[in-house]
Length: 384
Image (cartoon, rainbow, N blue to C red):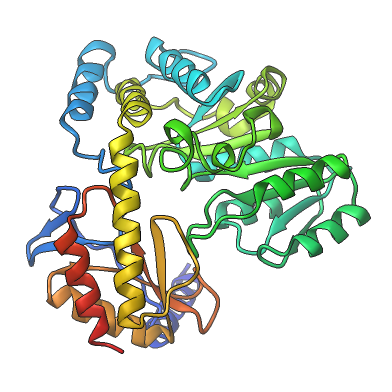
């Protein structure tokens, strides 16, 4: 045990020396565009509350109503005593919204992605992942019985070559990549899948609620149907402003996962109070187009001001606008300086992103005001 503790301590020391040590900031209150702690109040440009729903009074009221009506805990796994009316109501709302036959609810996007890759692929298959897929997808591939290969980011020529070599594979990609903010050409990806008798698995965590008609997602915005994907993963912790995730698909796919997915079978079901709130969040997301319109206005304003200021952004039309810095220590210095000036903008460093590509991951929300964005660009411009 002593040797292990020494080894752990040594690894922590090395991470500190490399400037990659991670800490948990304590947030005492969250008010959408503002974060508050003992040090003060900050404009928040690091969250994923894209539609500004996290503090929406109607959503807060639904959570309280759900707790009073159904209780806080589900009391068991979904196949024992954990599947309540609130879970079914949320599932029905998601199916109606997305046009899927059925869904399964999970405690996190990480768990849902583990299930999607580990249980929909077996040793006779091949998983083909975009190089920049989320850590949850990479870990799922590593732990799958199926062999996997990663193709260069957004390189559909490389994907086509892999599909010709491994027909009937499962192609894994994201609707919006979380660190770069870009989206693949899903229509072409789907066509390649059709041509090679492959199936598409899509993580749309950062697309659902934000993109497409009624916020259905990146896939709908690009002209696909829910049935064009073997399985769709999205979560409640981004635009829908809650916690947990879901997998959506055909009745056969979802029932198969219900029977065999260990993460689902052996985990306590989500809080029914939370599910009741997420049902309201889905409803608000569908009906309140003004939130997506405001978000798009804010994205457009930021990109225009950033271009005028000469900021080096990655190509992205989404709420995720990465500002490339390069070295981790420089990204940390800029982030710390901004915090002293009342702006919360976290530096993203290796191993989350590759060496030499540290960045400030700017995220925009419908709750941001015009002056917030102007102030951010003004402060960033000082570092050019």
